[in-house]
Amino acid sequence: MSDRVSVLIGAQWGDEGKGRVVDVLAKDADVVVRFQGGANAGHTVVVEGKKHVFHILPSGMLYPGKTCVIGNGLVVDPEQLRNEMEELDPKPEAIGVKLLISYSAHIVMPYHKKLDALAEHARSASGAGPIGTTGRGIGPCYVDKYSRIGIRAEDLVSPKVLEKKLRANVEEKNQILEKIYGAPKLDFNELYELATRWGEFMAPYLGDSTLEIDGAVTSGKSVLFEGAQGTLLDVDHGTYPFVTSSSCVSGGASIGGALGPGRFSRVIGVVKAYCTRVGEGPFPTEDRGVMGDRLRENGAEFGATTGRPRRCGWLDLVALNYAVKVNGIDSIALTKLDVLSGIGNLKVCDAYEINGKKYAAFPNSATIIENARPLYREMPAWDADISGCRRFEDLPEEARGYVRFIEDSASVKVSLIGVGPDREDTILRGF
Ligand code: IMP
Image (cartoon, rainbow, N blue to C red; front, side):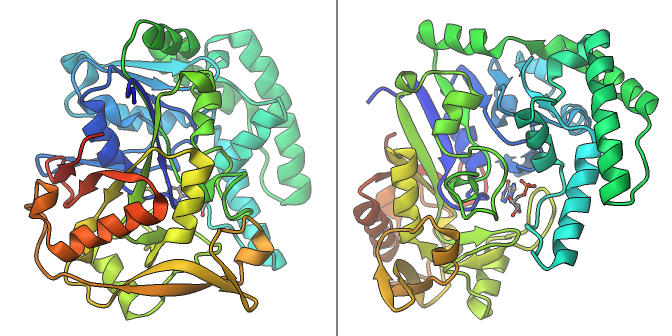
């Protein structure tokens, strides 16, 4: 199978450890493209013990000579972007990294964050219950995109267009803020000045990502599309309404990365050896007891974006098999296998019981999945520290059995195994 144009996506509820897998694969890629989401993501890469967290920048920014693209499908928070650029070490210029931001990416404005917080508060107060968003303005920004009133990156450098669009947005948002939420009004001039300053800072990076990506693929370069969040947070295929507002599945790479579906070579699904979720919503294998706490502690399961403790539980093969189908996953990158060392009483879920009926396939229905009770299979556990293992054969027999069981259940090869946080703590089995 050709590996020139790869899509890498999260196969669970996000936080699968995509950043470190992208980082490993980026080594051989010429171009790394982010295609959806925004600063709600938090991709962690550890290089020589130093932790780097990317929220909006593609995770390839640390490799010399790469082109990193923020695709048209993103919602960009310029403030966050600037902070991340400032914190980057080494600097892109110093290592020949080119950053390209699509003209058509949408801009997260301060009022999107305000509306995100107000809507969450209103949902909590109304009894509908919050979604548990990251508060980064993601939903409201995508709402404006699909309402066709959003401000795009290119608008920041076109004063007349910016003025016209922003004025209309401020008028509309002021009605909403005042009449629905009783909140203070926005000041047009303040926002216009801010957006203009953002435009000045972003101008050198703006460009046509469609042309860039097409050119790279046509000339035989290796391109890696980096997904954010995960399949079960996808706006169509996730546990709606407890999802994010973008298409996190592999198909999203075609839309948000501007490349026809037939031009992709392979889909890599990142799967954590157990499951976690942040925010509200169904999570059939969640363990609210001692084991959940142990997984959280062993796996340092606290949000890279919000610092929230993640909900933890066993690996869910029903959900994984669904992700394999929805994304067309060709190979699995299994992360954090080391966290299960010494955990004791290892279990995986291979079916649900819902209202007295057994389900082997994931039901994409909000009302059905809400009542899912996991049916578990006990797995042989291991105690040895596996962080030093660099070959599959080095792993204890039980750990190899765990990996093989996943492969058999999903009918997909596990091509990479993460055994520790560092770039080097990886077993490669041939992608
Ligand atoms: P939003 O994307 O901020 O609107 O949040 C919607 C839901 O997606 C919430 O449950 C968030 O916790 C979740 N979410 C958003 N981004 C991530 C992520 O990068 N990892 C895990 N969960 C996320």
